[in-house]
Length: 149
Image (cartoon, rainbow, N blue to C red):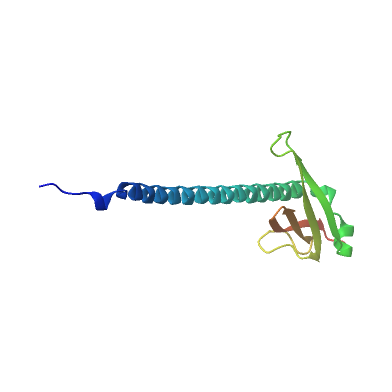
């Protein structure tokens, strides 16, 4: 008995084309997913770097309080804008300047739990804002002064 395969001529070609199309679509989807993941990781790295730099500049500003805290700032409740710079000599970081805003909130009693005498000391209260790229950090700070009579 002889079986005729004339009705199936070209069926292998059609099956190969369907498999090729399916594998091409899977490959394109994988490439698009990888590209999206790379963009997400890059954005996360930039945001993390900006956040760490903003925090480092807040710490630098707090360590150098003699440069910006004075009684005139407290009395007039003025706002100070400055640039804090980190120069690490590293080509990745380079010289990065962060905008720092120091705002006086006035004077008052020392914070509770600070163990400083209300009769001998007064505190100056400040808000310090650091902006680097899309990251913003706001910190509250206080500094003690001998009470003026």
